[in-house]
Image 1 (cartoon, rainbow, N blue to C red):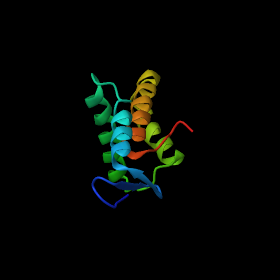
Image 2 (image 1 turned 90 degrees about the vertical axis):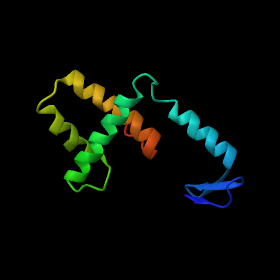
Image 3 (image 1 turned 45 degrees about the vertical axis):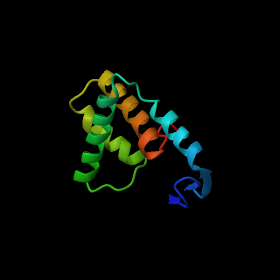
Image 4 (image 1 turned 135 degrees about the vertical axis):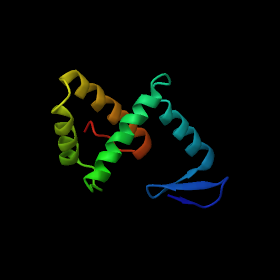
Length: 102
C-alpha cells in the first residue's frame, strides 16, 4: 500500500482510491465482526498467528489451514472446530483481506 497524500489517494492492490472512500471501506469491513464478541474473534486470529510463528509458516493456503485445524481436532469437538473456522474466516477477511471460504 502506498500513500500519495493523507487527503488524496491510497494505493490498494495497484489501484488508487480516494482516502475518504478508503476509510469508509475499512470501517464497513471492520463492522463484519460482531461487536460483542470481537475480542474473542481477534483472540482466535492471534492464536492462529502464534501457531504459524511456532511452525515457522509464512504462507497462508489450504494446506496450512488443514494442518492448523487437524491440530485443533485432536482435542476439540466438531462444533468447536466449526466455530473456530468461522471466527478465523471473518478475522482473516477483515485484517488480512483473505477469503478462506473459496
